[in-house]
Image (tube, rainbow, N blue to C red; front, side):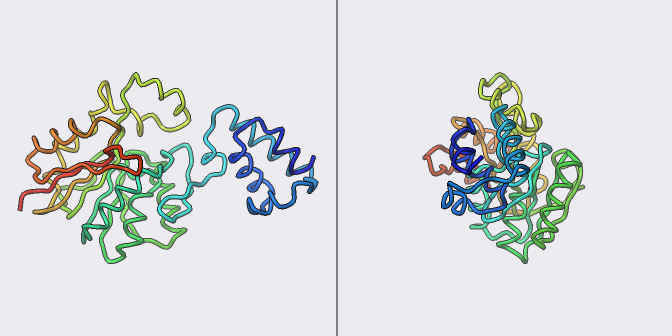
Length: 264
């Protein structure tokens, strides 16, 4: 089988087929495209067909490849963690703009947010928590790979922080409504990191209730949320006593991150 034959018969999105074939061959995508007549060794062909079968069954490309790019970091990912999304980079942008000396990333997963912040604010103290030990192991591996030192804590929400306070609390909580039809396309990712209860707001209620006690004066709570949730999220933050609440849009113009500041 040639490169062109493999790509033509993959049965999946052409861009994804090129990514998977590049991974199977060890060549770059450009090299794969440059030599469509190249014959594939039998073991490469077998590996590629296995990967395309997994993709055709709905498994995300990131899990098949075991990696996902986020904020310039080529992160290791496994089914134990949510796959980092491009829109979450806004959360990092907003955190970096505030230049906090201390940050906690609640529900860190792969460590994407915590590692991106620490990479750009090397002097900051960055703590990352997660209720999943398997997720924290992925975050640890990523931290070691990039030579970035963050503090990893095991436990739900703020439980591992024991009264500590920070200049910024960052969180991308589960916010999909429990009966959302889009969940059918997310079946391979950890449900605990996706579903936010009957109205998608359970996680924000926890954050609004507990975050103020862990914020230093004038510290910021910044949270990612779904489309159309910004008003409800800001109401929760304001009800918790945070001020200067605001929502910021992603590149599609959808309000994607909301935040509020602790009283000085």
